[in-house]
Image 1 (cartoon, rainbow, N blue to C red):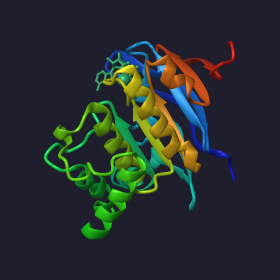
Image 2 (cartoon, rainbow, N blue to C red):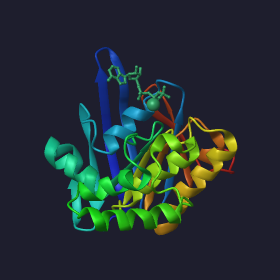
Image 3 (spheres, rainbow, N blue to C red):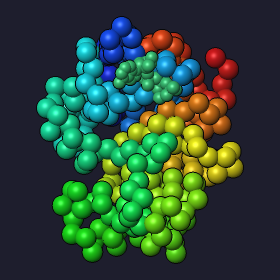
Image 4 (cartoon, rainbow, N blue to C red):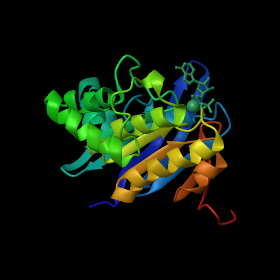
Length: 233
Ligand SMILES: Nc1ncnc2c1ncn2[C@@H]1O[C@H](COP(=O)(O)OP(=O)(O)OP(=O)(O)O)[C@@H](O)[C@H]1O
Ligand SMILES: [Mg+2]
Protein backbone atom coordinates (compact mmCIF):
# COMPACT_ATOMS: atom_id res chain seq x y z
CA UNK A 1 0.00 0.00 0.00
CA UNK A 2 1.24 3.46 -0.86
CA UNK A 3 2.25 5.63 2.09
CA UNK A 4 0.85 8.59 0.18
CA UNK A 5 -2.66 9.53 1.12
CA UNK A 6 -2.96 11.84 -1.88
CA UNK A 7 -1.01 11.73 -5.14
CA UNK A 8 -1.56 14.40 -7.76
CA UNK A 9 0.05 14.19 -11.12
CA UNK A 10 0.14 16.63 -14.04
CA UNK A 11 -2.62 18.90 -12.74
CA UNK A 12 -3.63 21.74 -15.04
CA UNK A 13 -6.54 24.11 -14.70
CA UNK A 14 -7.35 27.24 -16.68
CA UNK A 15 -10.00 29.86 -16.20
CA UNK A 16 -10.33 31.48 -19.62
CA UNK A 17 -6.84 32.78 -20.45
CA UNK A 18 -5.57 32.33 -16.89
CA UNK A 19 -3.53 29.20 -16.29
CA UNK A 20 -4.22 28.78 -12.59
CA UNK A 21 -2.41 25.42 -12.53
CA UNK A 22 0.20 24.61 -15.12
CA UNK A 23 1.34 21.05 -14.42
CA UNK A 24 1.49 20.25 -10.72
CA UNK A 25 2.73 16.99 -9.23
CA UNK A 26 2.36 16.56 -5.47
CA UNK A 27 2.48 13.60 -3.13
CA UNK A 28 1.09 13.98 0.37
CA UNK A 29 2.16 11.44 2.99
CA UNK A 30 -0.18 10.03 5.58
CA UNK A 31 0.11 11.96 8.83
CA UNK A 32 2.10 14.91 7.52
CA UNK A 33 1.20 18.59 7.62
CA UNK A 34 1.98 20.24 4.33
CA UNK A 35 1.87 24.00 3.84
CA UNK A 36 1.25 25.52 0.40
CA UNK A 37 2.70 29.02 0.07
CA UNK A 38 3.05 31.54 -2.74
CA UNK A 39 2.01 34.98 -3.90
CA UNK A 40 -1.61 35.95 -4.39
CA UNK A 41 -2.90 34.41 -7.62
CA UNK A 42 -0.17 31.73 -7.78
CA UNK A 43 -2.76 28.92 -7.76
CA UNK A 44 -2.82 27.78 -4.13
CA UNK A 45 -6.58 27.68 -3.68
CA UNK A 46 -7.07 26.10 -7.09
CA UNK A 47 -4.58 23.37 -6.16
CA UNK A 48 -6.27 22.77 -2.79
CA UNK A 49 -9.66 22.54 -4.48
CA UNK A 50 -8.37 20.06 -7.06
CA UNK A 51 -6.71 17.91 -4.36
CA UNK A 52 -9.95 17.92 -2.34
CA UNK A 53 -12.20 17.01 -5.25
CA UNK A 54 -14.02 20.35 -5.20
CA UNK A 55 -12.72 21.42 -8.61
CA UNK A 56 -12.07 19.06 -11.48
CA UNK A 57 -8.77 19.83 -13.24
CA UNK A 58 -8.64 20.17 -17.03
CA UNK A 59 -5.85 17.58 -17.10
CA UNK A 60 -4.03 15.35 -14.64
CA UNK A 61 -5.14 12.99 -11.91
CA UNK A 62 -5.62 12.98 -8.15
CA UNK A 63 -5.58 9.65 -6.30
CA UNK A 64 -6.79 9.24 -2.73
CA UNK A 65 -5.77 6.27 -0.61
CA UNK A 66 -8.66 5.46 1.70
CA UNK A 67 -8.85 2.64 4.22
CA UNK A 68 -10.95 0.79 1.67
CA UNK A 69 -8.53 1.21 -1.23
CA UNK A 70 -7.32 3.64 -3.82
CA UNK A 71 -9.72 6.01 -5.50
CA UNK A 72 -9.05 8.18 -8.54
CA UNK A 73 -10.84 11.30 -7.39
CA UNK A 74 -10.62 13.01 -10.77
CA UNK A 75 -12.66 10.29 -12.47
CA UNK A 76 -15.50 10.29 -9.93
CA UNK A 77 -18.86 11.88 -10.69
CA UNK A 78 -19.86 15.12 -8.94
CA UNK A 79 -22.11 13.09 -6.67
CA UNK A 80 -19.35 10.64 -5.72
CA UNK A 81 -16.90 13.47 -5.08
CA UNK A 82 -19.44 15.19 -2.87
CA UNK A 83 -19.81 12.01 -0.83
CA UNK A 84 -16.03 11.60 -0.58
CA UNK A 85 -15.71 15.19 0.70
CA UNK A 86 -18.42 14.62 3.30
CA UNK A 87 -17.08 11.30 4.54
CA UNK A 88 -13.31 11.38 4.17
CA UNK A 89 -12.32 15.05 4.21
CA UNK A 90 -12.66 17.99 6.54
CA UNK A 91 -12.49 21.65 5.53
CA UNK A 92 -11.43 24.78 7.38
CA UNK A 93 -11.56 28.02 5.39
CA UNK A 94 -10.75 31.60 6.31
CA UNK A 95 -14.38 32.51 6.74
CA UNK A 96 -15.01 29.23 8.56
CA UNK A 97 -18.13 28.42 6.53
CA UNK A 98 -20.06 28.23 9.76
CA UNK A 99 -23.78 28.89 9.81
CA UNK A 100 -24.29 32.02 11.93
CA UNK A 101 -27.89 31.20 12.89
CA UNK A 102 -26.81 27.93 14.50
CA UNK A 103 -24.99 27.47 17.79
CA UNK A 104 -21.44 26.14 18.04
CA UNK A 105 -22.60 22.60 18.83
CA UNK A 106 -25.25 22.66 16.09
CA UNK A 107 -22.65 23.69 13.52
CA UNK A 108 -20.43 20.78 14.52
CA UNK A 109 -23.29 18.27 14.77
CA UNK A 110 -24.53 19.22 11.31
CA UNK A 111 -21.50 17.58 9.67
CA UNK A 112 -22.44 14.27 11.35
CA UNK A 113 -26.15 14.63 10.65
CA UNK A 114 -25.37 15.08 6.94
CA UNK A 115 -23.74 11.65 7.13
CA UNK A 116 -26.87 10.17 8.72
CA UNK A 117 -26.20 10.33 12.47
CA UNK A 118 -29.25 11.12 14.65
CA UNK A 119 -29.25 14.63 16.12
CA UNK A 120 -28.90 13.74 19.82
CA UNK A 121 -25.86 11.56 19.21
CA UNK A 122 -24.35 14.07 16.79
CA UNK A 123 -24.65 16.84 19.40
CA UNK A 124 -23.10 14.64 22.07
CA UNK A 125 -20.10 13.97 19.81
CA UNK A 126 -19.99 17.65 18.92
CA UNK A 127 -19.81 18.67 22.58
CA UNK A 128 -16.89 16.27 23.09
CA UNK A 129 -14.93 17.83 20.22
CA UNK A 130 -15.68 21.38 21.32
CA UNK A 131 -14.43 20.55 24.81
CA UNK A 132 -11.27 19.02 23.34
CA UNK A 133 -10.65 22.29 21.50
CA UNK A 134 -11.04 24.36 24.65
CA UNK A 135 -14.61 25.54 24.03
CA UNK A 136 -16.42 23.88 26.94
CA UNK A 137 -19.19 26.18 28.15
CA UNK A 138 -19.56 27.89 24.77
CA UNK A 139 -21.43 25.09 23.00
CA UNK A 140 -24.76 26.87 22.97
CA UNK A 141 -23.56 30.27 21.78
CA UNK A 142 -24.28 31.37 18.23
CA UNK A 143 -21.23 31.93 16.05
CA UNK A 144 -21.62 35.73 16.26
CA UNK A 145 -21.25 35.50 20.05
CA UNK A 146 -17.76 34.01 19.74
CA UNK A 147 -14.41 35.66 19.04
CA UNK A 148 -12.73 35.05 15.69
CA UNK A 149 -10.35 32.50 17.19
CA UNK A 150 -13.15 30.68 19.03
CA UNK A 151 -15.24 30.54 15.86
CA UNK A 152 -12.27 29.15 13.97
CA UNK A 153 -11.91 26.41 16.59
CA UNK A 154 -15.58 25.55 16.04
CA UNK A 155 -14.74 25.24 12.34
CA UNK A 156 -11.84 22.93 13.23
CA UNK A 157 -14.15 20.81 15.42
CA UNK A 158 -16.59 20.59 12.53
CA UNK A 159 -13.82 19.49 10.17
CA UNK A 160 -12.64 16.78 12.61
CA UNK A 161 -15.85 15.36 13.94
CA UNK A 162 -16.53 12.96 11.09
CA UNK A 163 -13.10 11.38 11.55
CA UNK A 164 -11.84 12.89 8.30
CA UNK A 165 -8.57 11.35 7.21
CA UNK A 166 -7.45 14.53 5.46
CA UNK A 167 -8.20 18.10 6.54
CA UNK A 168 -7.86 20.86 3.94
CA UNK A 169 -7.46 24.39 5.26
CA UNK A 170 -7.30 27.58 3.17
CA UNK A 171 -5.89 30.54 5.11
CA UNK A 172 -7.44 29.23 8.35
CA UNK A 173 -5.73 31.94 10.40
CA UNK A 174 -5.90 34.70 7.78
CA UNK A 175 -8.36 36.82 9.76
CA UNK A 176 -6.74 36.37 13.18
CA UNK A 177 -4.12 38.29 15.17
CA UNK A 178 -0.78 36.55 15.56
CA UNK A 179 -1.31 35.19 19.10
CA UNK A 180 -4.73 33.76 18.23
CA UNK A 181 -3.36 32.50 14.95
CA UNK A 182 -0.69 30.50 16.77
CA UNK A 183 -3.30 28.98 19.09
CA UNK A 184 -5.67 28.06 16.27
CA UNK A 185 -2.83 26.53 14.26
CA UNK A 186 -1.75 24.47 17.27
CA UNK A 187 -5.35 23.26 17.73
CA UNK A 188 -5.48 22.36 14.05
CA UNK A 189 -2.20 20.41 14.22
CA UNK A 190 -3.08 18.63 17.48
CA UNK A 191 -6.39 17.45 16.07
CA UNK A 192 -4.96 16.29 12.72
CA UNK A 193 -1.33 15.17 12.59
CA UNK A 194 -1.46 14.72 16.37
CA UNK A 195 -4.00 11.95 15.71
CA UNK A 196 -2.27 10.42 12.68
CA UNK A 197 -4.39 12.38 10.21
CA UNK A 198 -3.15 14.54 7.39
CA UNK A 199 -3.31 18.32 7.03
CA UNK A 200 -2.97 20.33 3.82
CA UNK A 201 -2.93 24.04 4.61
CA UNK A 202 -2.68 27.07 2.34
CA UNK A 203 -1.13 30.02 4.15
CA UNK A 204 0.63 33.35 3.69
CA UNK A 205 1.85 33.17 7.28
CA UNK A 206 5.46 32.01 7.72
CA UNK A 207 4.81 31.14 11.38
CA UNK A 208 1.88 28.91 10.42
CA UNK A 209 3.92 27.25 7.66
CA UNK A 210 6.85 26.88 10.05
CA UNK A 211 4.81 24.53 12.22
CA UNK A 212 4.19 22.16 9.31
CA UNK A 213 6.38 19.22 8.34
CA UNK A 214 6.89 20.44 4.76
CA UNK A 215 6.37 23.61 2.75
CA UNK A 216 5.79 23.75 -1.00
CA UNK A 217 6.17 27.07 -2.79
CA UNK A 218 4.02 27.95 -5.78
CA UNK A 219 4.52 30.50 -8.52
CA UNK A 220 2.43 30.99 -11.67
CA UNK A 221 0.54 27.72 -11.27
CA UNK A 222 3.60 25.58 -10.63
CA UNK A 223 5.43 24.19 -7.63
CA UNK A 224 8.81 25.91 -7.71
CA UNK A 225 10.33 24.62 -4.50
CA UNK A 226 9.99 22.46 -1.47
CA UNK A 227 11.40 23.06 2.01
CA UNK A 228 11.45 21.56 5.45
CA UNK A 229 10.83 24.35 8.01
CA UNK A 230 13.95 25.38 9.85
CA UNK A 231 16.24 23.96 7.17
CA UNK A 232 17.77 26.43 4.73
CA UNK A 233 16.75 25.82 1.10
N1 LIG B 1 -13.37 30.82 -10.68
C1 LIG B 1 -12.43 31.53 -11.29
N2 LIG B 1 -12.67 32.20 -12.43
C2 LIG B 1 -11.69 32.88 -13.06
N3 LIG B 1 -10.42 32.96 -12.64
C3 LIG B 1 -10.11 32.30 -11.51
C4 LIG B 1 -11.09 31.56 -10.77
N4 LIG B 1 -10.48 31.02 -9.69
C5 LIG B 1 -9.20 31.42 -9.74
N5 LIG B 1 -8.97 32.19 -10.84
C6 LIG B 1 -7.67 32.77 -11.24
O1 LIG B 1 -6.69 31.76 -11.17
C7 LIG B 1 -5.48 32.23 -10.59
C8 LIG B 1 -5.14 31.40 -9.36
O2 LIG B 1 -6.14 31.67 -8.37
P1 LIG B 1 -6.09 31.06 -6.92
O3 LIG B 1 -7.37 31.41 -6.26
O4 LIG B 1 -5.76 29.62 -7.02
O5 LIG B 1 -4.87 31.85 -6.29
P2 LIG B 1 -4.29 31.87 -4.80
O6 LIG B 1 -2.85 31.48 -4.89
O7 LIG B 1 -5.15 31.06 -3.92
O8 LIG B 1 -4.38 33.42 -4.43
P3 LIG B 1 -4.72 34.14 -3.03
O9 LIG B 1 -3.48 34.07 -2.20
O10 LIG B 1 -5.04 35.55 -3.44
O11 LIG B 1 -5.90 33.45 -2.42
C9 LIG B 1 -5.71 33.71 -10.33
O12 LIG B 1 -5.19 34.44 -11.41
C10 LIG B 1 -7.21 33.83 -10.28
O13 LIG B 1 -7.63 35.13 -10.68
MG1 LIG C 1 -6.45 31.54 -2.32
